[in-house]
Amino acid sequence: MNKPITILLAEDEPALGQIIKESLETRNFKVLLCDNGEKALQVYQEQQPELLVLDVMMPKKDGFTLAKEIRAIDEHIPIIFLTAKSQTHDVVEGFTIGGNDYLKKPFSMEELIVRINNLLNRSNLQKTTEILTLGDFTFNFPKQTLQFKNEEIAPLTHRESHLLFHLIKNKNQVLDRTLILNKLWGNDDFFNGRSMDVFISKLRKKLSADEKIQILNVRGFGYKLIY
Image 1 (tube, rainbow, N blue to C red):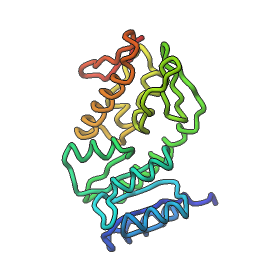
Image 2 (tube, one colour):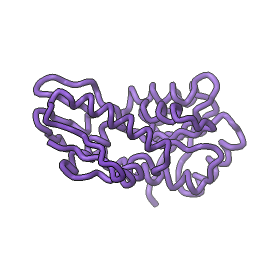
Image 3 (cartoon, rainbow, N blue to C red):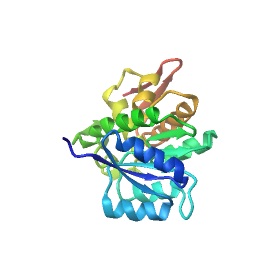
């Protein structure tokens, strides 16, 4: 039998936390359950889990703050946020600080498990050693860095890196909006679509040093990076 994947679950509702823990354990996951953000950070540092499931509203340290602190240590660990919040700016904030997926309460356990497996499969992409070039830009995907000539641009976030990777791989072709939302965000709902638009705008700004590079919005289809 394969070694179980270790998941850190930070959830301050005892009943819900226990339900999630037991459900995941029946799928051969090892679950480290914490009821506040401070304890979760300590457990993360001691146990080095392979995926995080974080409630946003927690005592002592909220999920967004916890994710920021962990992202400063580990740029690649998959993070899923659990929350009752559904405002667009909350969703965008979660993705901006490095979250990979966002599940609104109430949710089904089957949906959570599908999203966990999707992220674990997707995380294999991060092991690539590819360094890509785009004009005078050098994009180091594993290190999530972007250089223009010899000058390093502001560091890329986890989400920006994955989106830029797919844009470059599909250079001068339309990157299908629905496909990339499902691949990187887990689904193509309105909130995720708004989030992706924000990340596209950030990438345009970071690539603006080279006027020959453009990311075009192909209405109704997706985006095209041209050079």
